[in-house]
Image (cartoon, rainbow, N blue to C red):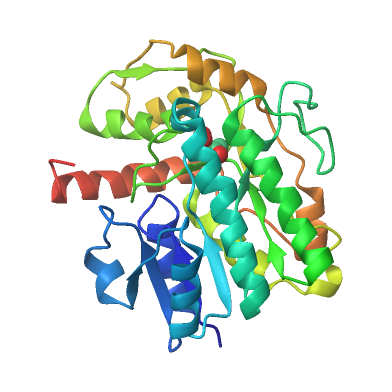
Length: 322
Ligand code: AKB
């Protein structure tokens, strides 16, 4: 049914989403787009085509779209929030310049386009508990600025040019497959690695720092379901709040300790990450996603923790060096 280009296919989301899309749309091409130095390996390389596609190169995106008769682009190229603060110019070039290239190619070639936004699109002046779908978005990180710009630009292209742009605001994503790298919510992945390795975890955020989090299988399903949603039901496009769980470091630590009784955690605060986390919502209200395209998460903290620990133990036995 669909030929899909995933830009950023070897990253935290892309490495799993590309394989899921290949499972769902078997037959047509799901192209793994990657940048030099982040080439696909293993299943990603063996189960379908792969092409070097730098999101800052519009002509190259167009070439690959033509070659594979692409109908839909998943644009997953981005610097995460903490690393973006260290490289704001690059964060803008990739997050906004790259998105602009995807929008223009989609306009010219008739592709649908998914570009994730984030809880990072909100800021200190946003209501922090059960943050509504439509509310104040005045982030003070470059990551947030690129995400709000992306939401507005994507809605503009939908209204002005009829480009089928859709997206969700991802919470912190937790998975055992590919490490995030450079985000504010990364601690919620790292804590599981420490627990399984038998190490004391140094938590970069202080107790009481609540943020929305989601297990990767739910996030992948959201990315597929929003693109498959009946457009006549969508009152929003870019971007939908989605939610499944909200916790602070104490809550996730206590949950892991139920399964790994000897596990220990201490605090070693990272001021940059703490500042960013304090500006983000504690929890999102995802009523619009539930009403407009039947969004519903499957994992809670308990079921995610059981699955993470089981799969990380297997992974770390199979690949002890990673
Ligand atoms: C980050 O922490 O930067 C990301 C996000 C919530 O967008 N995981």
